Image 1 (tube, rainbow, N blue to C red):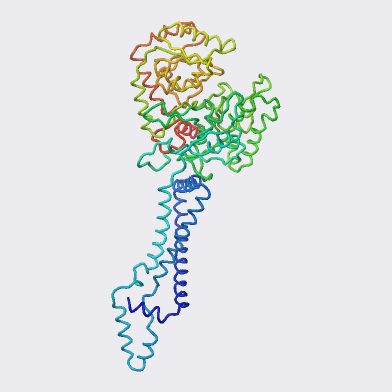
Image 2 (image 1 turned 30 degrees about the vertical axis):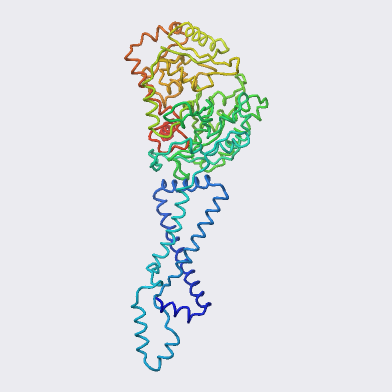
Length: 592
């Protein structure tokens, strides 16, 4: 080795030495690019055979770009290029040929005397101990494999140790941007070995990339998304709202003060991270249109100009009809999810104008499937009910099981309860007034009357108060409100309280995909116009104790499918409301 060093630096000029290293450096880079080209061809073949693998890789890349600030993303990219450059430079010191040059002076002096001496010296130099330039990585394949290994190892370290910000703010200026990001890491459960997301269903769906004016752009003016409420706190965390850390000590990060009319945002967030999402529309079975129709409608209830009120809905239809995937089946495989009742999108000339727009009356939308928290029972042939969002958004099945076990152990001190406020209108007021009268006059009933007290507090807006009343009750009365359905129905399921319905349109004609076909297994029905509605306590006492226990167990068993899982959850271990809806929707589209 010492001999070789003397030869290299004594008889090679600096210019020729650097030329030698530069040649090796460029050769290494060429080898790496040839290797990358082969890898790219193989990757394309693998992706064509496994669309799921392609989806996962693209999703990982997208999530990394979204989690890293722009300047850090380019910083790490530059860092990787520097590592790549110096790797090539280092391995350039390993030439392809192992034969060192013969010293020129020795060759001249010994040429006339004895050529064998040169050969001996040359042989002896090869038989010396392996020196630096005989390092095994001088092998071409090993060399660029080592370079790529260093490069990928650096990338792995960044992925492993990088965590996005954990702070959550709800100021008006940044609430739109915050609501588009995944909820903070501090509000998620992180198993030590989380399973890789896999699609266990027999379908794939594609999410239309709509212009922001149809969804996320609306959030910039969150203060005016509802004529009655400042929606900025409610659109935070992908629509989950503000976290409730004191609701349940076993899963404190899974509870949020979720607004009842926000399902469309939660649905969108779940679809973005769902394992059955595909980025290739050619292989999609379903096409999701993420239109925040409910948020837009509630901001235009007082708009007297009907053309202005309908403008965004009409614009959406014009946009969709220009898309090639719409033309494939004229929208039969397209669907949207609405966070408000269908009545808010079905204005007609022969009905009173209470602020609705015409979205669901547009011919193109009638070709689609519409998921809504309340369907029109008589004219909504393309409408299917989905649950109102409650306050529990688990990230794993274990959280659900823990909550179910807790609900089973609760001691229920009251036979029944009612949560609500009086209503105006002859029919609405009649049944509610009767319920409140009976509940207030019974020691077996707990009444929580909604409305603001002298201190500006409304207990019906506090999830802990609502679920507390239901958790202490065997039965929960579900009277129709402003419309047939109530979010309270799903709150009662979450609390393990058996719902008592007074109209078939409160649940039975609405949520066929979610509730069992036999309504008697999980609920009680008392016709609001019958004599039985005047003696509710007596009717409930007639039900045998064993039947009540069995019904409550069935209600508790419904909790997973009525729940919207955390938007960051992928392989959660159970079918939540989104999974149930997608499975039924795929079957519906296939049978059309």
